[in-house]
Length: 378
Image 1 (cartoon, rainbow, N blue to C red):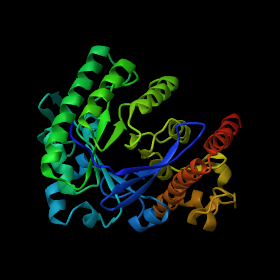
Image 2: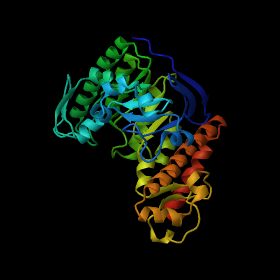
Image 3: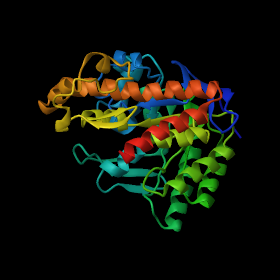
Image 4: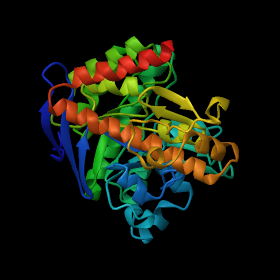
């Protein structure tokens, strides 16, 4: 077994749940967990400059290896001094493997033991990436936390096919870790467990990846339509097997209720496009529930989006004005809406950390979920 880097410090445990706070150490700074990574697939959080993203409270961002590999090219970014220099973001950066984008965006992708063959969604050019290639791409980018190539199937899928995906993910994980260690990177490589909500397969994936001893562990292939009870049970059983001294990352999960439920079960890190994509589409999150700014009832509503919010948008602009911007398709609509939604999410995570540290997380969770239930009934 290869020794992994000791990069996570467990700080606080909630006495009534598995919720915890910690610190992930990277070459570009600390990440206080639980944490949320805004998605910056192309090297930018849509609608916002990076100084605003940082001022809103983001400790790290997530970039997409697939997109950056195609344009402008990982080797070219390396020549520009790496991704941090290229995009002028000096804080930690997490890069995903791009595997999901290969399967979802690329026509006629072909998954083989040696790697993935696919067509670029830009020009149709046939390309091939091995697990080693994916590690090299992320090393050329120079990201702090890297994810290996993995494969998963939609829910539901036949068990035999799911087992094949788990076996292939383990095979690729072994190759990725071996190649990563040979390159002597200062970054971190986290393993991705698969198996859907089939516990026999998920446990098999977990045990196999634990033997490889990654620097952290992610739960992949969840939040894709499976029953919520099975989703939460899989998260809870998974975190019970994961070593407490390693960070746990739940990939692509962004609904506040799901975040609270899985923080309670021991998850440390999240990413999702939900707050930024919804902002651009005119849906804003508040302490009283969702607000769809294009609705006619806001045409003469002089209140801020959320009277309890301290973000720049809420402190300066009315619902009427924000609706006007959205209706006129103004660029500033996306900017101001994204400022609010991202602030709302990052503020929730600040409060989550505070609640765990004060041993009041379950009380905090109940209060947030009670507000959501009132919204749904109204």
